Length: 379
Image 1 (cartoon, rainbow, N blue to C red):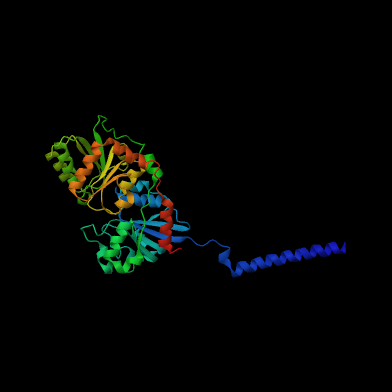
Image 2 (image 1 turned 180 degrees about the vertical axis):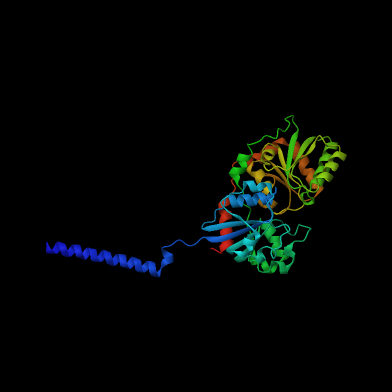
């Protein structure tokens, strides 16, 4: 009986000592027992009007997969029609808040017309990141990146492909260790779902229906695509061209179409918040751009398994294996003419390219891993 009482008291004493030891460990090593505070991230974006960069931003935010982060968004302009598709649990804040609050990372996603010193330079962030969405060596218009003073204080530059990153390193070699190549995020499931929501009702009379999606501005090369169409039409190769998008050149392009007598064969469809049915139902996707970074529209066409003709711009050769799942042509009007002529005439080649893209999977996981490494310098 005495032994039982002793054993009971002894076990209670040991249990109390263990509890005291645990409390001591918690007191001296609190971070081993408490979750790390979320890392605060600010994204700066110009607007969410219709465009490839804007769509890429929507996908980046909606699929956000960097763990233990708290994201806020500052939109310089709130009038964009794509804002309705942005997730609502990440707050959109004012400029005052964006430039007053403290962050672990501030990232400016829009590149065209951006001045890092105007946006990122005014934030209170431990690391400042600037996206670059074009191939700066192919672009005839200068950007902030051509000015060393505008790049001061920026910790990393994210280019959307290996080729654009190589171009950036040639322009500013002293920044080479700050330049990274990370593709845009794309929401493959959403693209496929939206492609089924509408039907553009292309005529099914045997003529090839070609589609292109992009802003109606000079760098997209639509004036030369119209001239190529006119030349092929005069040669007796008939097809239809649908251009989905809007922009400053709409009136001049419409005039060019009318003067070429192609009003019944080339159609300026206008802006579409959902361009995917137009891509999915087309016989051929064409990108005649003079320069790009990594075309979002081309990746969308890949997801929808459409045969692709594109000029050799930006990250084209990272997107397409020419003659296997698409056709890359030299960046000039004659090459576009030869490539378009070949693909419009050769239905079997179009089928071959489309079949090669069946089952294509866009890998966002590796993209988010790379983003986390650049944002937080993780191994």
